[in-house]
Image (cartoon, rainbow, N blue to C red; front, side, top):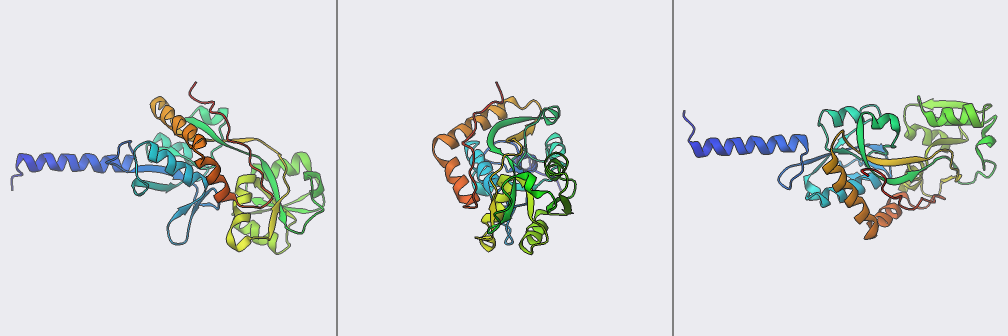
Length: 271
């Protein structure tokens, strides 16, 4: 059966819109694909019902709005630390907001907008724990982190060489070990620790020690050479700070666990 010209044109337009949705291109008619973490409460988290929450989710949604997308047009895609660069390089996502620390090594493969948040490596302990006030106090105690974590190795190799290290597959498992008393502390970025401590079921159980064991500048990862997108995202981040949305997102997602966030950092990319 022959397709009329008008029908053929409509089919071509439909295919174009579908391609736009898959690639996450800018434009209010398409779908914006954004890479986030699914397993970091308070930062990037997929709720049991399929909705998403966390500071990175709020930042990504705000950026999406400034790019012309409604919340329902944003598609969140799970990213792991090891595949963030690949997803950008192969256009699987338009940008990544996933506790993505800016580093010279990463900038060889992708560009960044931001930074939009400053995190520090810290320790999370039980709420009644008062004997751990510095990393050295972990000597002869057990510390939990995820397998292959540079945070845990930083503590064990340079700060508390006599600490025992329990490596588990997820921070959720470390939280259980900490609550049960099998470890004295767990370690990673303070934003991630605060997110776990702020979960409703963990309220009042844990606290951050309040250490700055490293400096992590979270940036929005974008494909190499995306200068126009970088400028638009930087403008959105500046506006988010100026209109109070940034502060509101911090308070909403990290709660009270002895967490003292840094002020919103100045934008240093794109200049």
